[in-house]
Figure (cartoon, rainbow, N blue to C red):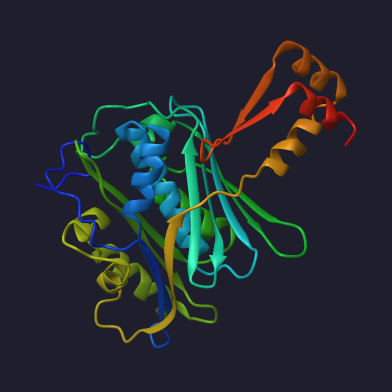
Length: 307
């Protein structure tokens, strides 16, 4: 038996590249995106020392961000946040274009060491770790105001919640499937599938999407059998004739910088900066996403007051 949980008895397949592929069928009226991101999720797991349940949750959300980010242009960015009252706390994931061939992504959990027993289906209990809450998707454009959509968590399993967001907030008939496969050695596979009805499609496109989504094998099963990003797409599309829209490499990246940390410190105000400078010879600020440490001595903090 293949398990998504901690007992999955499979070895890691480092030959599968981290990639997101987008294809579409004009005849069927649907688009399908597949993301295979094992190395990305491994890097995030190692960076944050994520417990298994936290790994599954963050891996699913980051996979969702990669799928949503597959159509980004220029300096656009997708940010997904889950605000939850469960022990895992809030989750965060971003995706953006590093260049025309590469998508950058990152993510973290508020409480990375949370781990729960597997649920009754032998899967990571992500829903139990999250509890109740909401999911917010923010798309930042090169010009103009960001677009934000918020929906309540439907199941806490993340895939169903992202589907609900697309249907309710963007009015796009969609299906999302996500999965993280692991064993005691760590992350074996991670990725997902996003299928959507193309603009202008009639009810036949919706029916075709629903039929194929219902027949789809679990993403973790497909990846354990060697499916890459294109393989995930074809698993849902079956015998449909597809046209390629885009293929991007995916890797971990971060948007933090010393200048951004300085701006955040300036926002604290002169009184707080003087207090910090007097209390400590060196003040440290760490990026939540990449854990990079930014150090400021007392003179540097005082100099920020003039900015």
